[in-house]
Length: 145
Length: 271
Image (cartoon, rainbow over all chains, first blue to last red; front, side, top):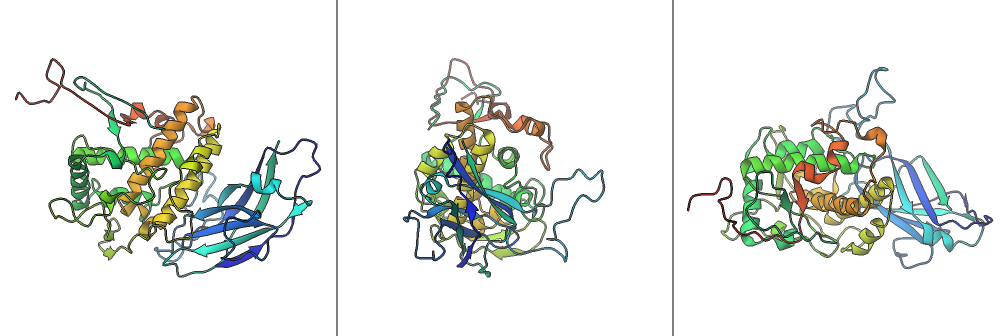
């Protein structure tokens, strides 16, 4: 299991209209390795494999259903930086990073100070030869009113 | 959340094929399903099981995950695969595994042998990536041993069904879908190999059924209109063509009951 904690994200407590939904967007998730399971906590940087889901800081979780190790020739699993030509209308490479949305409405309502850190625990699946943190480019907290 | 359909009278030409819960299959139905998979697995050309498994993962990698095409692509995929089975065993349909009520993998997919003592083709023990020429031992499924929530996922599906936009519903349903894959373990937890496990199809028929049920509750809620005329790989079906399962010749039945009518059904014997 690997743990990673984000920088603080602003929570819109000052809004006159309370949010009705909150999403945590995990953006640019790389999925070229083994599958894994990810648990998310608000303001609980010491969360570990024993913390579980029955704590108020538990925000959500998701499985990363991933591709496993590369089975092709060298370069097979390298995501191209863009289309080959302006006329390239092929679908994106299968390993193009993805975005994962986690609904965190109830957990965010329990946050009473102005910002929140996200602690992410990444658990490898059985048989995995890698124990690593989720690889992603950005974390976004979105609320809707 | 079950569509109750009772069909009486002789089936007409063009009658919809009904997909059913694997838990409700009679022993004869399960035998037919196993026969279809067994025959498909014996074919190494582009009519066979390996070819269609290869659409999803190795070697073709045409599947769509965490894109706006997740549900349409998998519906068109199941449609083609089911037709390939029906070409071998007429009338067979793919059943669904209802992980909203079941906390285990259906016995039909875990029994080592069938009633006649033959090996069960629905229990994956080895796989051969299409045209690789190499058969490998499949790691056994490890249901419930990965750190995902235990089945069943009825509450989670009920929450997803409350979404009113296609994008929100698809995203929520795909999250549940991902957890089920990882819950099963074995090659089901690997996108590249998952479709080489016959349980994959029972899982995805359930996903497709959930979309069908959601569609009945949200008529008119469709994917982004800019996607509707997009052709899906590799069969060229458009997203629009996937929206109505009845136009694809199937639907989801809670129960089915049929009795003969007053004239012989097309294709029925004289006796």
